[in-house]
Image (cartoon, rainbow over all chains, first blue to last red):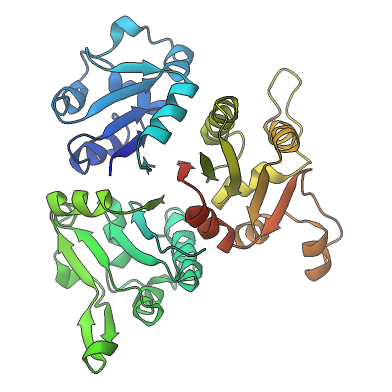
Length: 102
Length: 135
Length: 130
């Protein structure tokens, strides 16, 4: 019963990413979209939210939202996977359901 | 529409500051007519939705908190509140509305609808749901 | 696979509708079916044909209308949310004695039951919002 979690809030603004990580079972996937992509950047005061959960959860980030915000893939935390919209669709169908941390 | 799915409404927003809590409750009430397996979770600021003693008379906005008390009449009796969210806000279950339902299998005995659960328990409950509606 | 979409925000303040549109295009491209897009909360504002963005901006309302027409997608605006926010079709115009309507092509106004039904019928329900 795997879940795809989507997070669309900057971790510097809302606690959505932290709530998601707190309530995601082992083996879940987390996709950061919209302003949520800032959560995927390394070297920030919030990077440890992602790095701390990396063993239990697989993290993805929506490439088009990264590009729009001028974030190069070299700025991402190691292990975060970049997907496009078709990758988002694949994650949706590969998991059993989607939980949006609005 | 034959099979019954497990619907889970995840509420993470405080009431009144935005309309999400109220319009979410409207979905829950309509959804109750579809004879699905329904549960609600209150997480983060969502716990403020079911704090007792709400009085909106000076706002001019409807106080919809009494509606939560009617959920038991709609056979909605699985209301999960995350313990960590309560504690982070200095709240206990005594600060919340007393939500109950009547168990027809036990001579309509009144039972508590609210279950305070840990993050560890809640993540499993979310995992076992079929449809997650987020507000 | 049969997908249901819920959109909780209007067309321009938040990225939600834009993301949902791109998601739907990719899903259709991959051969999936979009069973229904349900517009709730301020998301009902995606359904007015009076939307007139500047020429150099994208027209989200028309994009939904076109996508729905080409792919036979059911675009449903929640009636309760629409009434609060002044989104009106012919039926609502008549029922509520309004002097006009503003529903965009391909959208229809219906009840919240349509969202629950999408949750029951679809293999996945994906929510976009704030």
